[in-house]
Length: 545
Image 1 (cartoon, one colour):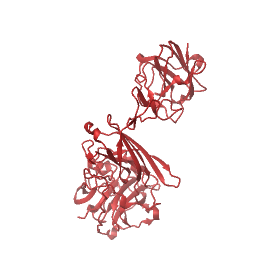
Image 2 (tube, one colour):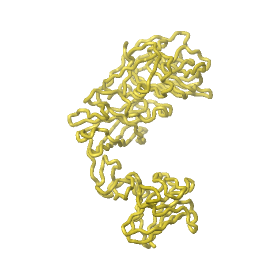
Image 3 (cartoon, helix red, strand yellow):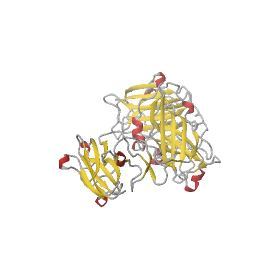
Image 4 (spheres, helix red, strand yellow):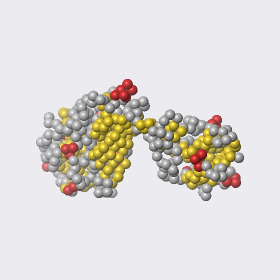
């Protein structure tokens, strides 16, 4: 049988396991995939949907354990379809495996056009509306519609059938949404090359919600039949109003990348910049190489690893959407091979499997920076000198991490504010903070022995300049604070607390604690609120008695 390359997105596991439909066997193909979507670019200004909530709600972050698959129509019979979990995971993204040791530059072979059969006259065939750059559209209601067939992933409630002729070779996305007051609730969407032959199905998605999405690669002039249907549960069909959209996929473009790896810890960082396509981004795919340009296996596999990532989006000013992202991860390269890592192939992919060209970049070792210098908290791009750690000390003064001396047992990702830096001429130490702020957000540092704290608070270090009794108290115009101090920063419990207080009578709903410190002894102070409703601006003061 002639082969048609496609991407199948089946994002609702329960609806993919119905056992009434014909089986389509999927065969993995190990051909290169770097230009998997190059042939199907949308022209500049091409249209796209505004959101992909239906896709994102089911897909979730990509799982690095799932091995990418290029699905091919290989053979078909009439056995019930039973798609197990591994197959469903493999079909999530069209990221095909590559030959070992080769760069990801091989173009995806164009699919061959398949001649199919038209629909029987009784089934009826509907026309799509040409929306120009925005694609093709249709709408209607499947209420009171006769059911003639069903898809391998579900259906059988009653179909509206549309024929679509691909104008050029490329990747096309088909999106079905329930619409109107009586919407199509449990949507089923499937595509065939022959209208009345279930074994020619090339894509199927059915969910117990009013959305379905499929994506497939079509050759020029390929005719396919698109079925709008609903999941049937026993004697209860699903019908209703819907909208249907077809559009050409435009993959993202990766303009630049840079990579670093710490050979001692395997911490890795990759910085990415590029141009957004017409589908939201989902993550990165990468693979390591040695000086001989041979693949270094990761997790026992020579295949690329995919990693979900949240990107920052911006507008260039002329309407061109841009993205940037920072991927930080442990490389999982075998320890004995960490010193062999020389370069990295990296690409970005979107939520429908559209993938950028691959960029190969050198993998640099981290720089050693000095005390007070900006730093990388995972230690991949830069490393702080011994005796210091990379963290944000005072987010109100400097929201970026820098190298600071470490307090005893302070977790590296905590923001520690040095109260000694706020000495006043009268001998006090004063710091003005705000527990109601949103940026930067409060960090979770736990609670003291006083009840009522939220666990999200500001933490301070204070080193006594001389032996004395020190008083710490909070004040403000409104709010209700809880204040406690520890001998050890990241360890909770009464055994490490100097003191804890909620309210002092003369301070109203503010707090005061007193305890003795030896010269050069450090205490860690926590300012929290009594419940989240009492978060407000505050002043923390320290005096020697």
